[in-house]
Length: 348
Image (tube, rainbow, N blue to C red; front, side, top):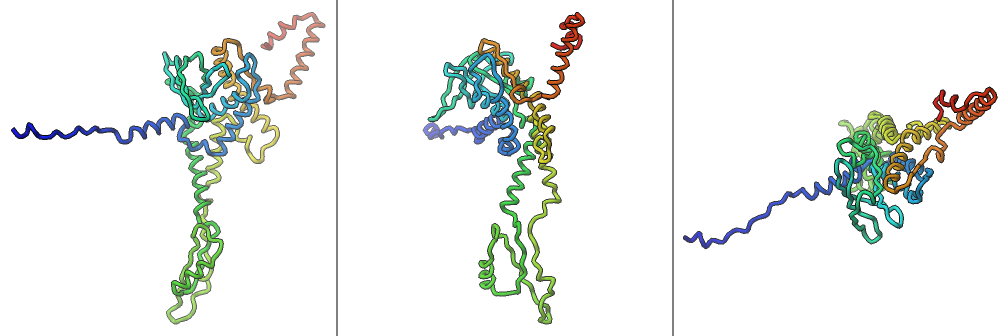
């Protein structure tokens, strides 16, 4: 009977302890790429700079919204995140630093955009027709999202970051240039005084060694008094070779020929690297952006990266133009239709 008046214990609400942390980590991975670490390396920033500079120089026809500043922002976002989202506003294109979208059959229908501001970001919900969304490296399972180059080469990106991080840690903590200095046995007070007199210690890694005399009371062997170097030998793990291979893999995934950044490269190799980057990487991205802009802005848009970068063989083009002019002149003299001759060689 007394159990009826027993005070009930408050119900304890159980929550998952790491749920919020997992959500934040997942969002960070989605925004920054594979792990958000390789973006800090000079190799990745050099590739992103090439993308940014080339797209900023591109010729844009059909719209004034894609100015050079917007093109540079588009290129950097595409290089580091695989996609770029801009709000089409009366004041121009406004970049979004974060976004959520809804889709229908894989095509975006609406966006919730986080727009940058000096006093803090603002959020707006707009339809897909009001958003310019550039995507590169999309997967068939998620055609509405792009994939950054580093996410397509996660192993190489992590390896590059680990190697550079390990080398930086070695140079900051390893006893480079320090030596093990033998010293006769002395009281601890004298040893500490002598230790404080040493200059140039690196991270308190200078070691001293007590040298014991022989049983007969004679001095220690003279060979025992030679200092021993403590600088680590990194050549056995081949850091230079691994670093070069990781860098070359990252350059390749960004569409940059490794020979372009080789210290011993030559002028023809530089020109060929520029042609490769513009032809097989940047011009297709420019075509995707022009198609998206044409659909969203309502007027035909053309973007050309090849002409501003001079990504073609000027001498070969001049010779080809001279041959075409000569062929047209001979066709006119002989009464042959020039258009038929051009059709035979598939010249449009």
